[in-house]
Image (cartoon, rainbow over all chains, first blue to last red; front, side):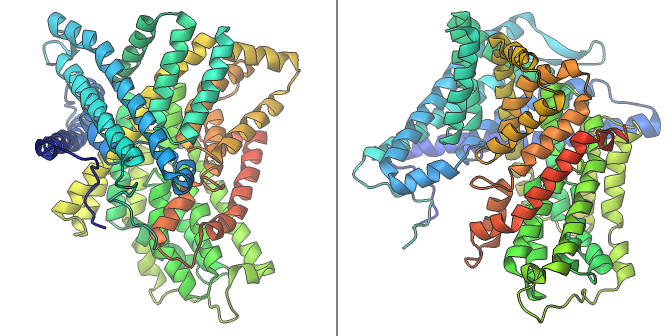
Length: 194
Length: 436
């Protein structure tokens, strides 16, 4: 079998393009988060070196760290989810999948739908927080030195929730179509024992 | 249903969902959301709490520790500090009975001082130590058992991801937890090493495959191998020493360590552009996976508080006249039992918020309680059917001659040794607090 990630399901002509766009979006957001981690590491070091060697700390670094973590997590959450790296116990579900593959897939599909529901709820309930930060102009940092507005972070949070919700829906669609479809349950990713 | 009943049902449902394969943070968030909704009777309040728990992550500086120490651990693996540790340990200890096994334990302890994940140790030493042991006539089952058993040192000797998670859950100082992990980690390594020597002496058939086994170390001369340790010891000294001396916070020491790891990897010309990008992407994925779970735990902790479950448990403990030792023993046994089914981080998320209010009145040191929790949770890395370290070794090995059962069997003596060390630490808390 090929190593191409299984997207599964019959599709119209424009669907693969839309999917590639979505995958590209996740990769792009992930890349921003990746660079962010590296920059954060350098900034903290600059602060430590500046403080100990030249008694000249960078102002506002702790605030930057706080905001960065949420930014990094929600930039990368969609891609991490798509890569199957969210913590999950596989021992039982693997056994179930070998025994009753269609049942296991249908159950996993339900779990994916619940995942989508969670991120929709999170998106809806976090939106007021973004709106408040945007209208009030809330910020963190040291006034007069450096300030970081909150709203971009909450915007990233909303984007991350939306991406994860969509990814869960894509998972659910794939799992259900393999569970109930005629094409069989084979997963393009997995090598099957002969 | 009363709030307490809702709390109990939530935990049971959560365990079921996690075990049957729902993403761990999704299970935590959804069940907590519904639990709070059921107790408060208002979906608006429950979802607002969920949003707050998520956005609250903004105000926690300590979360920065996670990506930085993960990055550091990956970079030192690329820089092949694990190989240095193994060569040096082998040159020093290779000639005694079961020497390669002892050297693997020692190398793990050394490597643990620059990396915080057991998985990293398991991967590195499966590649380095297992082939070497098999070449010199050790039994395969013993070789993989040693690597699995000693990989847990990575999570105990600082920096350690599990200690970080406990620190975030219990609001204890991560720096203090790191310092506290040093002595128990070294104690565990010593016990492992002694156990190997004893087995090799009195039951050699369990260690060696045939009579032709030799203990000759590699041709490398000892002085050179020891000199190769300099970067590792320097980096570990900077990171842990820096926290101990109060030069920087745990987050800052992670950043310093990551930069040090980067410098070493570049200096040794082990880092390509592609490799560097892969390390950074991997860092992001591990970070997201852990922080997502911690955000989820944030709301679960609120559910537990709302349900009043800790108070009920406390009444039970007082009513049954349980001694503190017995209470702790029950706690440890539950964790070990859960460890056979679900992963260490999930166990800590479920258990710590419930038991912290229970043990707090006993005036115990919560740093010590953290070390006890982490060791108990780590035993689960080695026990079937769900033993993360064992799975990692199996997938790294890609050798059909060695089954999962072999690795579990080989790791079993180490799990027993961990339990004994855990008992010792419970009985003699000063093992943990001596450096604090």
